[in-house]
Image 1: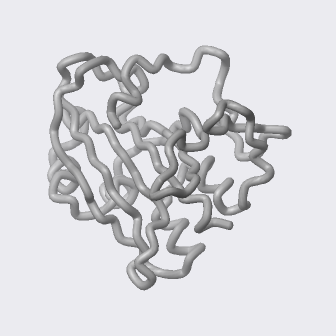
Image 2 (image 1 turned 45 degrees about the vertical axis):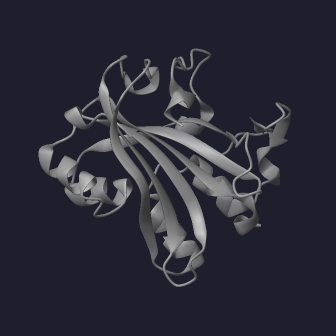
Length: 195
């Protein structure tokens, strides 16, 4: 999945409207076939998740009213085969890739899937240790650690490949810590759960 980000240039056609606002009149996202999908046709809570710059786990818990746990499916250090401009990764840089499910602890429903690319050399050692130990989700870890950071939404869209046979939407954002892009996260939301 990391190859999805290789050589993706930073947007140069002006700011992404979702970086600073949650409403874009007549806004669309690209559907899997390339045709525009009107954002206003999406379920309201899913629209909010796609543009939020807050912690998704917390929002999911409040909306579905159950604790949400992070199940880490994959976590490993890899050497980047190419550059990832969105977080300034160069070929041969070592990064941590992580894939996780956000699951309701009562219902067992998978509310989201997350894929992350992390420049671990740029985060404090205590944060890195807790991240590697898979203690909690990245957003909660950042909040609990007191790191000053902000999230920048890079893109939203329809997943080109169905997830478990179902249509899904995604958002990709980067987390800036100490003025540097450090973490790139794509979160995928199964549309059916939000209808």
